[in-house]
Length: 348
Image (cartoon, rainbow, N blue to C red; front, side, top):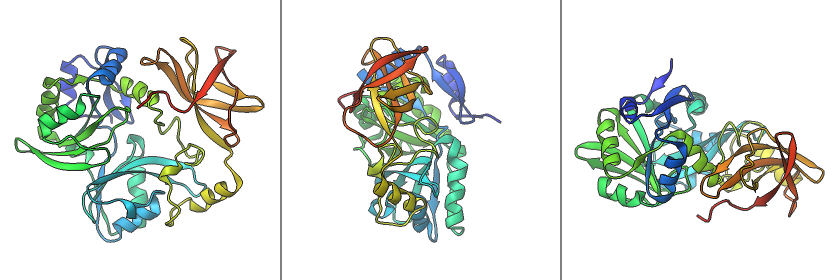
């Protein structure tokens, strides 16, 4: 059965087109992906991201379980802060990438990707059977408010413009609202969770305050420009955090599933590595296209036309460890085209 957000009718009234995201019928666009993308880059947009996983986690051994389950060190995560982390298998492959919101020493919200919410919950419960996991999706709505004008909008509506990585519990005319300084667009702003019974009013207030409703199509082009990997395309169980360039979220100071495999990669070197690249004009690299660099080979994990830059951009995995400058080519429509490896797409 396909799930729907509590504000599905609000989206329909605004002319949204819907598609399936992880078993949820969610807005992919309203006016156009390009217009919504540009609104977020220039002013402020609002996304319904209620399909994303979120469950509260607390009880005996709850924190120890997260320490074992995830590769970042939760001991470093203070109450009132967020943390990016990953769940790995024994070979170091990425089962999911996850955000943690720590409300207190004992209460943590775990935010996996939509398709992995049940499996990540089960991993945690297997490690701490006495802990309590409460799925928040059936009772809450999640909105992402993003763009250069987002902090001012959040301040006006919720009384707080969250700094990056902070979380706040606020009141909006009697409605409980949970606000985090997180996002997936490369812009400033935050993500808001609100009880379903208040969601339509909160969403309407955000739009009335000036946020442009944006669908998940624009969210994907925005996250690509920000060089943020997507689980299921840029990350999966065949890729380790070290190969993906996400070693900042790996702490070897604690025991976790997959640690030994990552230690072996540190010693021996990675089998492949992720790069960012640009193409000329409207040559658009797509997921699965082949790439090559001298004798090395690889594939495009994500690619699209960049509305901000006006040309194609992509992420790819290339065989072997990083090796300085490489002359990259990508195969588009059965022809090889030169591409340029870059450190980032946008100066953010």
